[in-house]
Image (cartoon, rainbow, N blue to C red):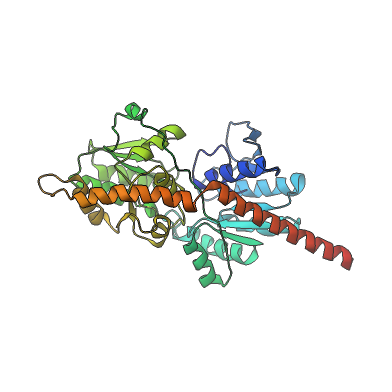
Length: 380
């Protein structure tokens, strides 16, 4: 509950729900996913039951209105054994679910109050929601050790660390021609256009660099037109910079990750980022914004940048040319980062292992609920 649901056509939460939920369903669990997919009538997907619920389409109300209606449906109709509630912004739903006897775990998606789209009242709400989620939920899930440390230091509570997963893939390159690019001959950004993802800085860095390979920018922002406009202005109609919008063709996107010269990752507040995991699993060398989350996920096996100038310098060094002596060590480092990244994903971010951890958490929450129910019956 709390995401856009399945099929996963939007972001990391949705991919996690699909990958985890389908695995639990294949193991015999009855999984219900609350979705908000206007115009779709899917009621079953990869073994999961899908319940489409409407929402008020506004940046400040969409998620919470959808989750509120989902909670009503769960309490009245389904009475599930356990609820996995994604996004701390849904904190007001914890108490009603628990009052109905439904143990509820909340997944914290990074430090929401620091996101640029939540200013003023929005930021204050997310600080309250994070605090409320940690204090009231039956369990708190952190997808990175850095987020778990934040919960421990800020609230004195231990979170359950369960990362996202990714696949190690070799998808080929036969579809690159659809976009007019060649293998290892372009740089790639895949991100929602929001300030904390530093798309603006990355585009500006590329424009002022001497790199001649194209920059492909994949992503959009339904509620941040002002930021989208600034990103396009920063590109200044540079023909090297190509904005592709959202790409929901998984095979094509996998090929873009796998064949990029580098994957430029600017996310800074979101814990473990699924796009970064996918890029590493596909063997893309990473140029990452320097923050604790990205250093954790990459195990420091990436080039890091803190601003547009630093990223531009990296791109210049990778490009070589008259003004920049090509450094063979950089090329070797990129190849090593690609190989190490794939192995790191295989060793630490497997979806099957992630599903194991979620299954164990669900069983613990259900067992705890049964014990409490038994004590109430004895007491009565």
